[in-house]
Image (cartoon, rainbow, N blue to C red; front, top):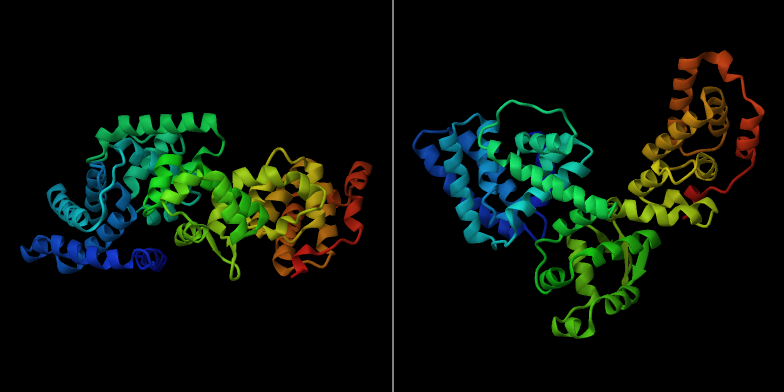
Amino acid sequence: MTLAKLCYRLAFLKSPRLEDKTEALAIGVSSAVAPLTESGLIPQGTADAISEELLYGLMRHRSWLGCQLLIPVLIDHVASYFGLPEQIASACVCGAHSAAKQILPMSKHSEADFLKYICVSTAISKNEIELEIDLGLGKNLINRIKQALGLIAENHTSVRYLAELDQQITAAVSALADDLARSPCALERARLHYLLLDAEAPWDQVIDEMGSEWIFDFLSSLVEKHSMTLKEISVLLDHTIPTEFARRNNLSAPEFCRLLTERGLIAADGPRKWRNLPLASQITAPAVAPALYPSLVNGQRHLSRYDRDIQIAVVTSQELSCDDLLALVRQEPALNPVALRTALHRIAADLGPAQAAQLLRVLAARELPSFAQAVVSEMLLSISGNHGQESLSVADSEYENRSGQFNRPVAKPWAST
């Protein structure tokens, strides 16, 4: 197990709301695997590694313990990852799963929901290694879903224990496509819904009856505003949740904030104030970015004050013209490095290499934070290397008309406190 994988999973298992359950399940999983070591079927070191893998997998997917599909998926993962025969892998998984059912609450979610949940996680992931570490279900299921999503080429190699899932995976992908046709933010809304699956009373009943769409909308508003007071959150809950329902279930703004804090979505920002965390920005970026365009273009808001995912969603949007993007970069070159690089690539593609190089030289001459200076210098070297110095000296009047504004002094929003 790599250090990054170990640290990530330990942080998850030892989180305050899971630590007690993790300790109890660790004992149960070890006891379930122990007979295989005692009989000499697997060495102790392998048994310990299997126990750690199953502990994480069962805790990570504790909301799906009632889904029978989880068992063959874990069997396939343990057999493939540790190179074990199906019978031994099955004994490990079934024993650990039985222990988990005695310690953790059982879910009522369907098999189709489980596969759709894995499809959503796979579709939104930008890093296959991180996805594999996070899900803890191995590569085989992920690859099958990526094939169904069209993210990788078809692989006709037979995979043990999972071939029978093809039809169900296809159905899950089809259901997801229908959701996306209805809402461009369907993936993100589903991701939030799955994050809230293990909500405790009374919020589990609230989400069962009202769904989680309203929580997505709340987080979108919070991300757009950066922070909200407890009073503002309380007013929002009063307008969203029926009064009698709220009174009967004793719902309150502090408890709502605790629900979102436990899931890494928000954090306290003073005694009675709350701010969003990067995960909330990541989930709501497709919904928040379009609402920001007008105020960003006219300078009422500063994009550099938003998290990376919001910045990237804004600069990659085709709704923002290249001229608007030029104005935005001129006003705020101190964006997140990934967002700045993406914006400059878009601008360069529109201007052409000669004009793009002139723009980059203008930016390089300004006083920028070191990370922004590094991005600008890197792109300038890249363009210079690809097209030669002679072409870089050419700049037509159209470029002067569009980008002469870059020579004017501007405010430095990144330097404000």
